[in-house]
Length: 84
Image (cartoon, rainbow, N blue to C red; front, side):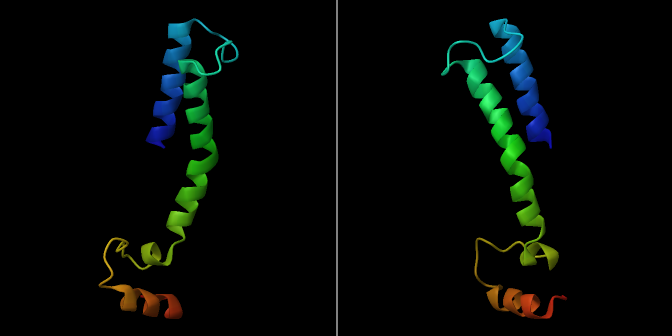
């Protein structure tokens, strides 16, 4: 959520700097267009990844062991029973 607001603030500040009120200006590779696309991409993709993260079985069971494999057997058992 903070990332989304930071990107929105970046768009606003870039609009003030480039003195562009509506649209993204004529330069397609300019800083305003990049800021607007970063904000738009975050609005599209962040909710999907947050939803997938929250519905992950490891998160539901209270474990975030994606880097190591020492609790994989426990994680698999947790997935089969759906209760930890």
